[in-house]
Length: 111
Image 1 (cartoon, rainbow, N blue to C red):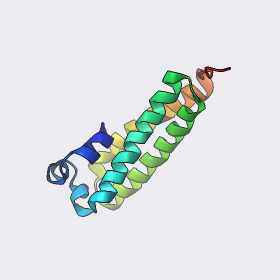
Image 2: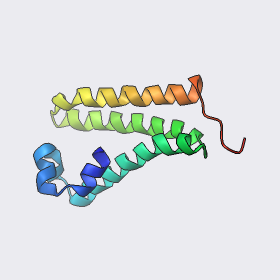
Image 3: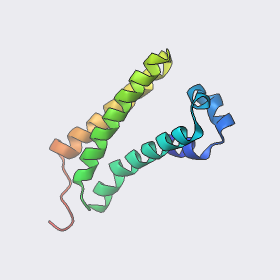
Image 4: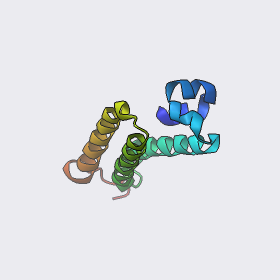
């Protein structure tokens, strides 16, 4: 949802919700939106289709890294009020990473 919002919402409306977006080039904001969207697809589609389900684990690890970078970014800007949201996202991504990596991995369709 965050990825779609960063790519589809007009920048004036988006910067009212996320003030940092008005301070960076629109192409950068759209790029981050595409990264968010791709991460979401990477968490869902490989396991759902059972085509290369190991990609779900890789996507979860990438989402953890993305959120760690987001925490550094928001902390450097003094936006400490959004850090709990990043912590929730990291927790969920770690749950997927553990669940699909160790606890309940999905077998590939052709296995």
